[in-house]
Amino acid sequence: MLDAVMAQPQQPPGTEPAEAAGAPTSEPPSDLDQVRRTSMAAERTWLAWWRTALGASAGALAVGIPLYNASRDTDGVLRTLCV
Image (cartoon, rainbow, N blue to C red; front, side, top):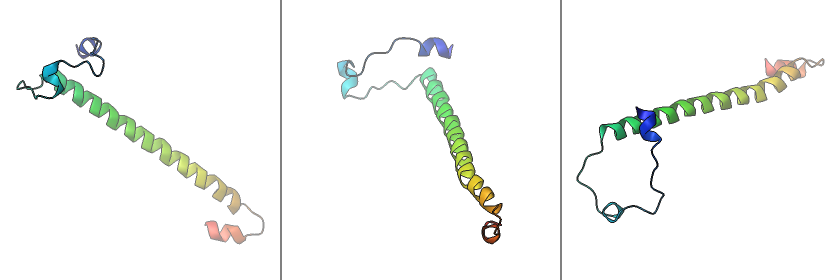
């Protein structure tokens, strides 16, 4: 049901009716609008968690791999600094 409503064509920006341009309407938002906004907010949150996880993983690899390679150095000085 939600997909069918979201697939309906929307008016392009800047072509709002005159009453929607500046005057607030007295009609409350429909339940479907609230469900749509909640669903989109949940999706944005989920994507933000994934983005954070991927960034943290990339940062850990960017720091961890050089430190691991430096700890395998033969002179032992870097080994003591990295452990």
